[in-house]
Length: 393
Image (tube, rainbow, N blue to C red; front, side, top):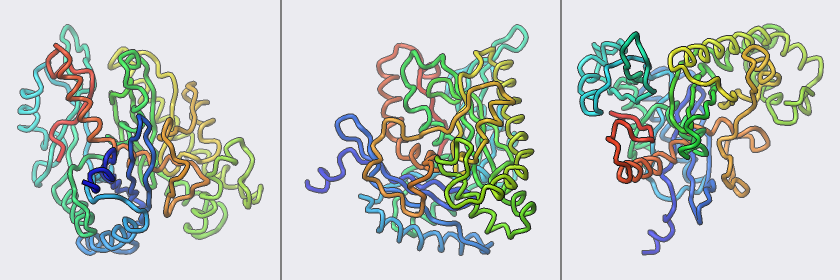
C-alpha cells in the first residue's frame, strides 16, 4: 500500500539514447503540475566498437546513475538514437488505420531499405495531401533493426530497469515540445522544432501537438567542434569544452560567456558561421516542403532544442535566412524544476538536451489521453485528434 502511494503520479523513467550518451529522467504529476523527480546523464562508451560490450558498459553506468538520481520504481521507456532509425514520408490512399497498417507492413521495410534484416516498422499520420484530383494521406514511416533495439533493451535491462516501450527519440522530442499545445484551437498553430544533437539534427513541423513532418540532417555539434578546433589549432576535445562554456544563457545576447576570451569567442564564431547558415538553409527547405505539401500556414516560430541549441548567434542565423522568429525552446515550460538535480548536466545552461527524455516520460500519459479522446469522439480512430505511432516496439 505504501509503495503504491509513493509511486502515485510517477511516470516511467525515460532513457533517451543519443550519439553522445544517454539521458535519464523521471517526472511526477501532483495536483495538475508536473515536476522533475530526477535527471541524469551517462556518457557514451568511448573507443568501444563491440555492441555487446558497449551495452554492458552502458548497463553499469546507468545502474550507478539510477541509484544516485533517486529514481522511484524500475519501469522505463526507451528512446532509440535517431541515427539508428530510418524515416521516410510516403503517400497512401485514404484508408482506416488497420488497413494502412497492413499495407505498410507488406512493403514498409523495403521502402526504408531494411528488407534484408529483421526490423520493427512503425508509422504515423502527418496529414492529408492533394495529389492532382485525389486526396491522399501523408505517412511518416519509421523503422529500426531488431539489433539496434535489442542493444538498447539489453543496456537498460542489465541496469535493473524494466522496459515497457521503445520508440524513436524524435517522436519523444515532438511530444515534449507539443505538450502545451494540445487544445483543439492549437491544432492550426504551426511551429518548427529543430533538435540539434552531437552527430545529427532533426527538423520537425508541429501542428499543435501533432507531428506533420520530420527530416533528419547529417549536421550536428561535432561538425562545429571540428571547425573550431581547426581554426584555433586545438584538439577537438578542447574545442568542444570551450564551445560548451559558450553555450550558456548569459552568452546568448551576443557577449561571450564567463571565462571565454572574447578573441577566442570571435574566432570560433567565424569558424562555425558557414555551418550555422547551412543549417538555416536546410530549415528553409523544410518549411517550403511543408507549405507546398499541406498548403498550410507559414510556421509561427522556430524553436531550437538538443544539446547544441545554445550555440551563440545560431538563433539569429536561422531567423536571418528563414525570416521566422527563432529562439531556444523550453521543454519544461510549465514544469517545476526548482528542486531537480541534473546529474552529469550543466544546471546553469539550457535544459534543451533533456527534451527527448521528458517526452519518453510522458508517453504513457499521452496514450491515456489519446484513448480518452477517441472514446469521447464519434469520429473513427483514423480521424482522432491525437497523433500516435503505430507499430512501436
